[in-house]
Length: 226
Image 1 (cartoon, rainbow, N blue to C red):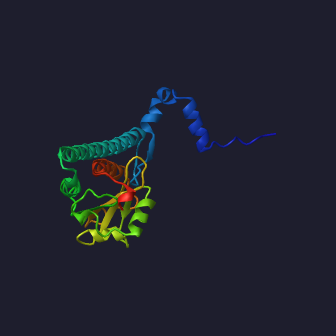
Image 2 (cartoon, rainbow, N blue to C red):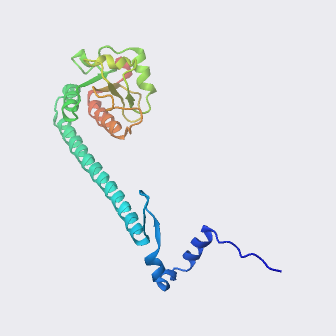
Image 3 (cartoon, helix red, strand yellow):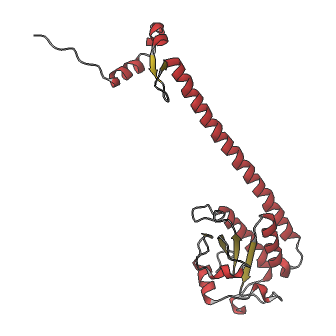
């Protein structure tokens, strides 16, 4: 009784070559003469040439990744230098009542923002009511509801009215210290709709909020002062 030979599949061939890596060494002529389809053209190329193309493609991909890492590193370095300069300005300010203006001016300049606004409440230490005006119960409630900075389009945010012009995008950062209820809001406005987006990371903005809050705590805040 005759039986038909079992037909090999592509998986069988792949398994055999995997288990027998010496095959092409023992049959070098097969390796040299083997032709495979070109990945982007209709012609066939040698297996060695195909492998070289694969390696070049991987090398190019690694180059792009490395370039991205270098770019991000340079960007982070610039941000760190900018933050250091900003902190130095706040630390050098001997008059705490000037800190709100210092924060607004330095953020606008150092981070190249067209508009920055700041409001604080529950303090009697500021002679200029510019920083305590236009604060409503809804403003306080909104600040208390923020677990992280808001980033995105203008929408109908009340705090956006503190800016001199309607922004294309904005970031709203709550100000508080040591787990206490917020005592203010910092608003960063931009005429670029992509500057502040809802899917962006907020770690950098959180740092700005923490540093601003620490500096402004020198004013002294108490709910009794409201």
